[in-house]
Image (cartoon, rainbow, N blue to C red; front, top):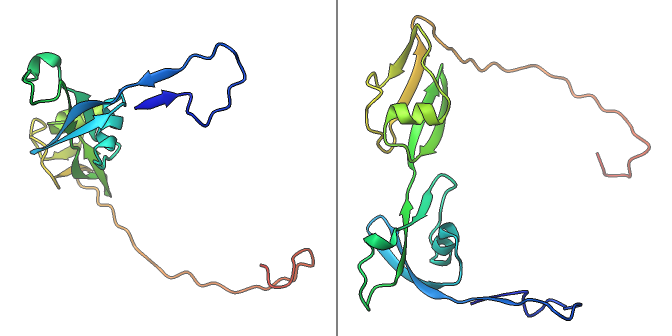
Length: 171
């Protein structure tokens, strides 16, 4: 149960309202695993965290509509569903990064992230209606333009300056 204000809170008013949020059983469905937890939280993401599930910011946690829950005496009356984000690789004009998404197709991913394929550019995979799968590479490149990255050592010299405002041993 959650009690607001907490029992450690000092009360300075005569008519303080105390809220008690009762814990209730909630089934948390994460892929093929179901965890039943007693939680006083109301937000689906906090309920999943109460169940000990590690979530990434891109994961979606949503309540299951009451009509879809099998009403038996054995099952909890509430369920939340964890939709895991899929990790992909994104290459935009030679800059490679990793992203997570819950979008289902390449086009919906591009739209959700405000990305467009300009004239003269290519998209990989060529079919923007392709389904997104774990580890997939989505690339946008200009035809005939190559991005080259070179690492070169830079010569440097060490310069020592005395600073009387610093204590001995500090730099």
